[in-house]
Image (tube, rainbow, N blue to C red; front, side, top):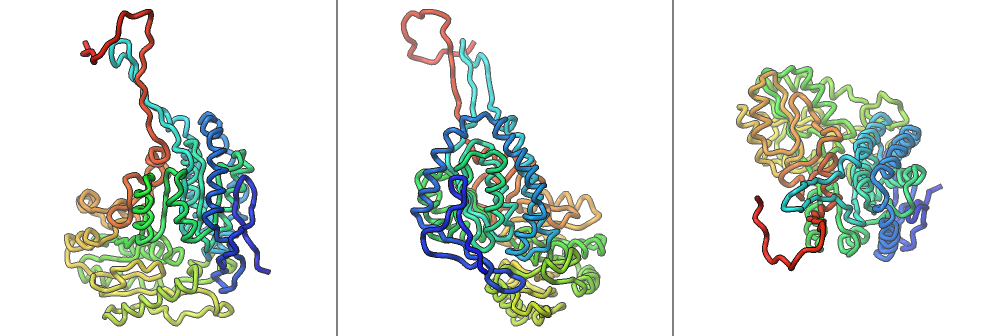
Length: 500
């Protein structure tokens, strides 16, 4: 039977009223396993009103008590890890170990947010003037919202709502309609952890719900992760409505391989970073840039047998599966279309996964691994984000040419260099115009106490996700100048006194 999902509003599951639904697939079989309700603007407005009412009391709760809710939430996440991972894999298609990693990286941000009492401390200056003290306070914005993608249905919602709630805000989460079950389960766990009803609302929806969020006068800030065209749309419309907005978009992450690199290490890194999660990661390495033809030939020689040995299958096939299906039939069609464009435009398809079929799962959305060599920057497979198990090799004649490829691309999410030369690594990290850099690390996702964010067309807004930036994004600063008279004063003063 097809399960009918719900929203999470006011501390309980609430059936959708719009009459519109989105099909939720099992990507391994291609079957519809659930239907997610698509909220109307009126349903979104109702969720916001409940959130606004609840937020006043939550903001008045001291930060230590708010942090204790997150502490209990961490315990519950660990308790239900297997249950959450299975639900995530069933809707997204990730392997179980990858699904647990998705949850774990979100959990680490929640752990960081337990430090809210310290992170929310303001500043104080005594005797700023004669008998005058000055201090600043970080206060919550009110009701804020997050619009999150299908590829990390646990991690990115937690990256958004954990710091927002720790700061004293109420949060409206609009998760991807492709895999909405885990966000609903997270909301239930937050309720079990002691979060007051209405502080975390999960509203499923499509563009109608997104536009309602962008236009709602009581939503003060919006965080988004997804494709660059949608990021630009949300950023421009949200900012035009006077909201604080941070949007994170697409990527085309280059990994430069220098002649002195350990080729086995580089090849292992490329396979894991390029094909893990079927390439459906904004930090996936999709472009290998070996410096020199000899380096390229050695790298390709190492890559081919590793890629040909990859095990592709459903999460139910065991933990030795390397990656599963992509999320939808449309995603599979787009990936294979871009692969064909690479062939048509003259790239050399060294590993061809176009005819991949998995016995018993012929209707699933599985895509075999692909490896291109001799890709050039004018090709579609180089310019566009493929978001699939496709690795392109662009040969560079020199270090400067390799650096230029990464710097000239319109996306600037992540990059890496593999080398034994400290001078080259230091120069690369200093000069490259990309937000996250790995040195002999293929996917340089910062830990929770640093911040995550790209440059160029990979990010819009001036503050990053998680780390200290999250507490800046979800609060505003109020500065107080205070003087306490010691007795009756004669007359008033109409100018600033010069400080002694």
